[in-house]
Image (cartoon, rainbow, N blue to C red; front, side):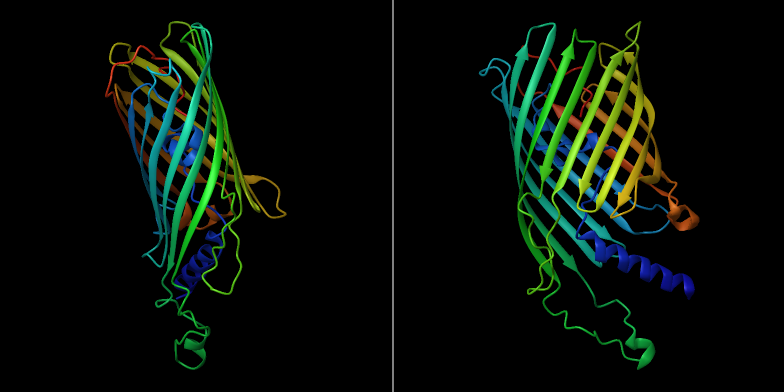
Length: 343
């Protein structure tokens, strides 16, 4: 009984705070449209499909996130290596048995300008994002205090109009990518979303503004001697209202076949988080592996919780999986993103 009450309390805390914080992926590069609208279309082929799955805590059904997206680059030949990027992203976030649900649809549009020469290729991208969100909550199965007081579970507050909320929002992003001699690469980006700070209160008379989210990300590729092994450092910083996270780490790429571009990656990251007045503290170690074969890119990661939640065996950590597949619909003489760190 105590464990049941603990789960109910913990779940209620999550539901009461989730409206102020977005979902997140540890392998954020596996969902480029959600990371930064300026990344839409930033790849060598013409069309890219991405699918993501994340379970917040594997041993207990809490938050589960699904995301799919498609994006493309247009008119690269006509624009002499510059191009327009566009796409469509969808995500679905549900708590436990579906008591709380988030659904979002986003439409990014970007423009990428090519700079530099053939040996040192630089690209600057600017993107904007329009989004539609739907939030739903089901309070019928919640247990209120009056169940124990008067043996009746009637809602103490009239939640009749609290079951859904529709939101429209906008965002923008900037990204810089550099390719040096087709061996080394650098990518740096910044994005700001929820610029309109929409009201997410389920109460028609309430005012609960969604915090603006600021994202900074950086990655690189350093090819070692022999062209077989490369080091790929990663960095992500996100701040949304009182919530802040810093994720850093590195992957090692082993190039198995140059003709089919077959590669295997292994690595890890470390996440720090802060909330309100609390300073940065340890949150999780993230172990990951990734495999690429031609147009297919598959990644798996597992978060190992090292925060105070590690004391509850139920909340040890969670798995995450992404799949990316690209299609070339037309031949292009521009192949500058082969060494792009993919984010």
